[in-house]
Image (cartoon, rainbow, N blue to C red):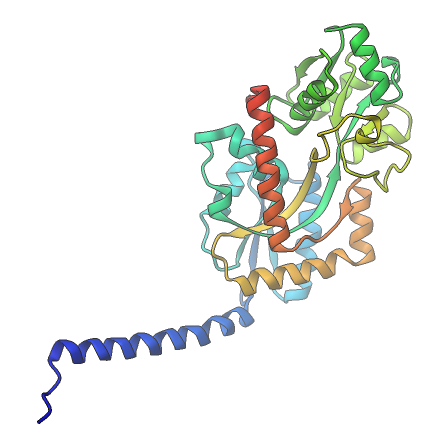
Amino acid sequence: MKTPSSPPSLARRRIGRFAAALALLLGCIGPAGAADWPAKPIRMIIPFPPGQTSSDVFGRALADRLSRVFGQPVYVENRSGAGGTVGADLVAKAPADGYTLLLAASGTITIAPTLYGARMPFNVQADLQPVSLFALVPYMLVAPPSAGARTARDFVKLAKARPGSLNFVSSGNGTTPHLCGEVFRKQAGIDITHIPYKGGSEATADLLAGRVQLYCAGGPSTYGYVKDGSLVALGLTTARRSAVLPGVPTLAEQGITGMDNINSWVGLLAPAKTPRPVVDRLYAEISKIMATPEMQALVSNQAAEPMALTPDEFGRRIREETAYWANVIQTTHAKTD
């Protein structure tokens, strides 16, 4: 004679069947929801002031093109402050539904975590999902003609002949130009003095006037000054020569190594746990957009190189650059203003 199932055992079986059915249902809903995305406007946060950076130029161009592709508005919202971390924090804490995106520059993502330390309001690795790196801005060492150097090698010779008498400027303590100068000083084995300014325009003005001797920078204004002869490009901090200034050698070509990672990039990120189908859709559309002649021309006009790293490639680059900059900051004892 069979013994009837006890109430607890029967309840457990029913709960198990319900859980399995729910899992199956959610599994069916997930892809459908991703296929329906976007069903409403998307907000793109740019953590810098409007119109003042390549990030803003690229972000607005990308938002416009994504709006056309998705049939939904992609609104740009500038939320500047604290080296871009204010706007990035807003995205890090936003719902992971694909409707809030971050258009970030490398300094906010790879330098700020070490520079700000415990003051960093979010964790890049845990709170953000890389989507695609789509523009690389090469940096280079530039000097006024009055400095008397035509190449980085020339500058090193001058600095070694006059220890402590030459200087390099930056747009502020802890910025990429500052850290670049510190790495150059170390790798070249020279004694030069750092002079921090309150911004890039002030640093550039004194450089053009010949009052200071060296600056590590990128972007359209710097390239423009090199092209018109106002500044001399001593060397690029990239692994290969730039298509924008093909005649300028890299620092590695001149025997100064360990500086290939010093550049700026612009990329798109989303809150962590954003559905992977949404991330992949964004990447797929960005890669198509970056392949168009009009977008390639826009990026090149900003003295940058168009690209389209996959989410995984972008994530790997973020981890590698974060480790690189952490070592630079720790060995040079650099601090933010």
